[in-house]
Length: 180
Image (cartoon, rainbow, N blue to C red; front, top):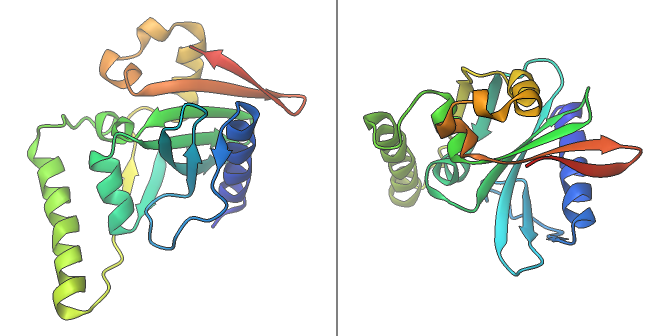
């Protein structure tokens, strides 16, 4: 885990607690997410915290559970934490799929889903662990997306904009919501 990812996890916990949500103290190994949060309304969301220090286009999701969540769990979120600019872009899991240019009905999603199911079957039948990992390069860099979100959200493709939940800026150890 990189220094930026450690910072990202700390920031996500700090942000979620500052808005009144309860952060789980323990995430089970192999769960497919970094942080579990119970919102003040009672709903649970699962968060993958991604620290951005250098590259803002290259990311990875580790484990078959994480890949499965990315594809199908509506309560799965990715928090892209720009550690240089003290900003957090909160997205839903389908942000990655849409940023890759895949429609959610395309064969690519079905292929990845079949791959995770195969990994699960190998583990169950052959008692061999398959540690899946997908590495992706976004077509739309995160910092550019944040810049356009601040200046003109309407300039962002609507299919991607629909996956953005919020943009937060850290100022003087306090999180301020910038978007929406």
